Image 1 (cartoon, one colour):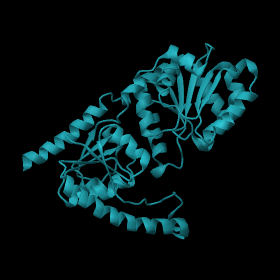
Image 2: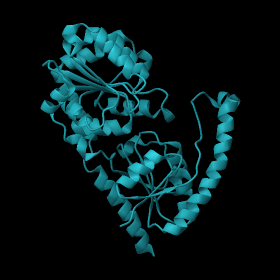
Image 3: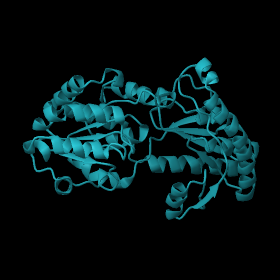
Length: 355
């Protein structure tokens, strides 16, 4: 089996793909920028309008690139996981009669997947199929879950205590706001630290923009609790150990982190990003909370006092932690990688049988 990856040509993306032994192909494409401000304000923003006009031209060139590339590669199936590069590839696949499979991680479908849904043979879903209401598509919806790196399950609590320098036996809270941190969450955490730390340890992924501020806040802490706070710009290989040590997690509500939390059965306080595309983080959080699998605190209601009250209540209640751990486990799909691969193979083989 040969797997080719089509992307936008970014050096980091290319390096990551080629490091896995896959062939990488770059095409041109463009984004369609929407900021949730309403149709009139979007149209009156001439900078955004200009960028979208420019990228419409890039999309047309990308469609030609994708069609030419797919004619050359002759794939048995094309897989699109959303994103602006996936749109011309998906359109080109259907024009050439190549089977198309989509994967949607979130409860709300992104623009690319919505535009391609009616052209797809199958759509793998990250959430249970019943979460996708009002979708106008004849494609088969198959719940496969969201793939999670196997390494994330290999954390070690004792190693984590050494790694993060947490000598206190207090419960540990892991706060993550995405790969670049979360400014609103970080600021609330900084304001609440002094009152939170006597009762807990905190491992905090703050992002590159806020790491200096985090170390400044740590230096200002009383000496008796300073070692309870461990700020980090980004947790990569250390994330598995951080998860293993954490009694409670505070997180945004992207689909990938939810899949990790479900697999690891972590009691979680979610603070969804209100400005996420298609409001997907809020919708993810609403679906999870409705089934009792996590606590949710809206960013619009986020204050140091309210954040502290909600977090301390969860940290202090072993019964609540146990309930959330058991509830979020229902979302875990440890075989998501295999299920998604099986779906792609099935669609490709179905094409062969039809021929």
